[in-house]
Length: 280
Image (cartoon, rainbow, N blue to C red; front, side, top):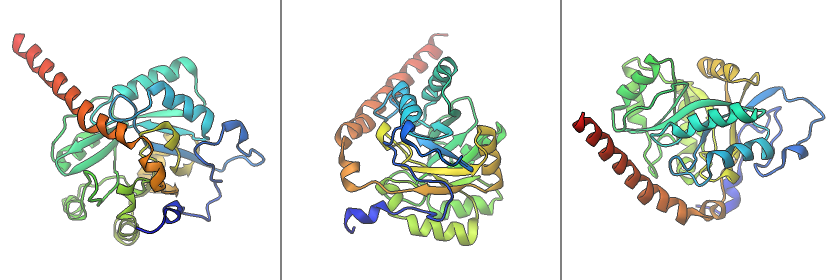
């Protein structure tokens, strides 16, 4: 890989929406001209799964350090973080809106589901996962697609899904992580020439400081506006890739949580559920 500066490229440089650093305080955001498009970060993790920021820390960061209009707490195979965010937002009346989401681990890779308010089992097929979401009125986005550096849905599996006339709404064109970086050009190419799915830019943030490094723009500013744009495939991706230094900061603790603490918690909860059912 080339020097870090290559990782700092941005998409859609001709956009009318200004780019603000994720760490820039809200009161410093230039307001001489009202935003014409809404901004959303639809891939954020908390300590409900393998993120390093609590729900409260994440929401406070979004409120004070970004100009996002809509966010999604999309923890791995876990919806408790999204519910906690909704409950906290109802008390504090944040200026942004929250959409229910979860990043589900299917047998064929991770899948982001939006607008469904109940949990789903891990390790189902991609087809089962997509069907489950659509039957409940949810929308489906494939995160870090085609990547060989994390659990991702591959190109052949997506083609198989489409050949069965099973659609999804969007695909992450810009995911700032190294997992999103390695296949970025192929993803943009095949979506532009063949798939024409809604373009999504999301931070995949596991630390609050990375929120809004990538984001999605859409007509309007509300969750309803965003969902309409996703269905109509009119969203656009923006942002930058994290530098190697940014990705390494705190990576040890985060990987420990992801690879050891979180799996142990899932095993504990699974045993507890099995025991309760057995004793009924």
